[in-house]
View (cartoon, rainbow, N blue to C red):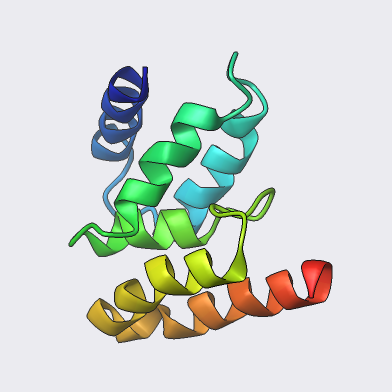
Length: 107
């Protein structure tokens, strides 16, 4: 099932205006999470994959999700988001923000 969601999400990213920032894509996916028949399980799996992407827009979109955390522990978040911040230093503040939100809500 994640393969079909991946195709949908990739198609959406490819079809939307190229100047639409990843942060705006994240907002779109925030809404879609609750509109899918699996409550965003497949969508979340794709966003996790995107954290390893070499496409800054996809990584930014994954980091911009605000309605849930992509992983269930802080350690998993750090392990997946840390390399993304190293590849894209311009997203390091966003990674820090996700971790601060985790600490505030779950710490």
